[in-house]
Length: 170
Image 1: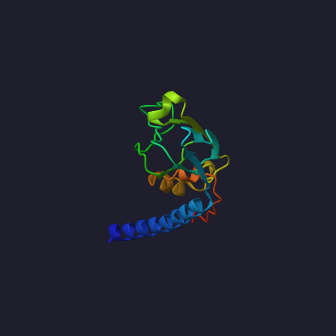
Image 2: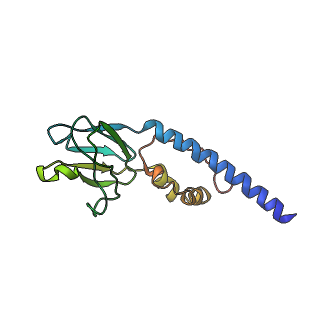
C-alpha cells in the first residue's frame, strides 16, 4: 500500500510537470522567427550571412539550379551541430531549428568551388528560463524534470515563456 501511494504521488507530480513543460513548448514555438535563405540560379545563397536568435528557424529554399545545403559535421566539424539535405534540381524547401548558439558554416556541394557557401550566426540568449530555474534554490525538482526531458536547450531559447511552477516546498 505504501508503494502504491508513493507511485500515485510521483505520477501526479510528473503530470504537473508534463503540463507545465508542454505549455512552455507551445509558448516557445509561437515566438520563434522563421528566416529565409534562397539558393538561386546565380549559384549563391541570399543572404550568404545571417544572424539569428537561439530557437529561430531558417528555411532554405531552392528557386532554380542543382543545389543542396550541407552543414554536416563531417564537412564542418566546428559547427555546433550538423544539418543538411540532398542535392536536387527541383524546387525544394528545407528547414532547420537552431537550438545551440554558435557559428554554422554550410555549402552547396556541387558549387562550393564556385563560392556557394554561407554562414549563420546564432546568438545565445541571456537570462533564459533555464538559467533562472538552474540558479534557483527553490526549484530543484523542476530543474530535475527539465533535465530528464532534455528540455534545457529549448528553455535556453529566447521565449517569451510564462513559467508557473511551485517551489520545492509545495
